[in-house]
Amino acid sequence: MLVVMQQGASEPQIQGVIDRMVELGFNVHRSTGVIHTVLGGVGGKDEFDLAVFEVMDGVKEAVRIASPYKLASRSFRPAGTVVRVGDVDIGGERVVVMAGPCAVEGRDQIFGAAEIVAAAGARVIRGGAFKPRSSPYSFQGLGEEGLRYLRDAADRYGLKVVSEVMDPSQIPLIREYADIFQVGARNMQNFILLRELGKERKPVLLKRGIAATIEELLLSAEYILSGGNYDVMLCERGIRTFETYTRNTMDISAIPVVHKLSHLPIVADPSHGTGRRDKVAPMARAALAAGADALIIEVHQDPDRAFSDGAQSLRPNQFVELMGQLRAIAPAVGRSL
Ligand code: PEP
Ligand code: MN
Image (cartoon, rainbow, N blue to C red; front, side):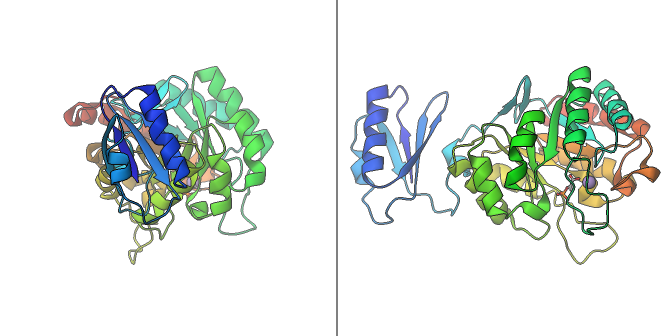
């Protein structure tokens, strides 16, 4: 249920509604918009009369939310969410590019990558220190050592850090070094992890599972939001279909669909979305044109020798060229880069 307060509703009026919602068994989540304050009530009884709220002072309207996700729904924050990562805003007019290797492989590699992507205009460096690999024999990541390289390189080149968390036990370590927790496709429905991230006060980049519907993605986001962490970004990274030419099928349509259904920013990952280097730039351009708020792109100085995902990693010159194209496209869709 949502209670939309009137423009200019007073703090005591808002508090009165919150108290009544609590009395009726709801957990209350407050969204203070520029014009309206919206109070989201979750977990209360299904059977109650909306009129209880409609007649209260300062209330504009009370509505039942039909969708199974409440806090992730667009009606909770009609103007959209801007996730703030220091001085980097994700979900605003300026599109943010996150770039870097699939995995942190060493100090020189990460410092080199950070220099390249920062010079090209990226604002966040990516790199896994804990890698979810399909095979237990593949490179599993450098762990804390990798996180330290990422942090140092990011600080040196004025970047933020996004890195994957695979298990609740890794949260304290990753919190210390990264600015954004990445939840990988394989963990989109790791509900214990999602609940723990709901207690954090650091942004989360939640990737769509390889066979997940958009509704399932939004429900996974709801786990984090319902814990009180509202800084969630969703990520389209390709889904598994019958097509085998590409590694995954990049669902560009998920971008406008998510924007309509949810207030959360959406990030596009054309690297995992296609799995092939030569398809990354076209899909990145399409994602920007379709309204993506950010892009996350794998870049490697020597992709043929990359420990993971070399086939989909752009070479530095390809990334620089792509950034030029994105800069040209952005104004056509009312954005900048
Ligand atoms: C990654 O970002 O390198 C990664 C493992 O992504 P995904 O979870 O989308 O496969
Ligand atoms: Mn990867």
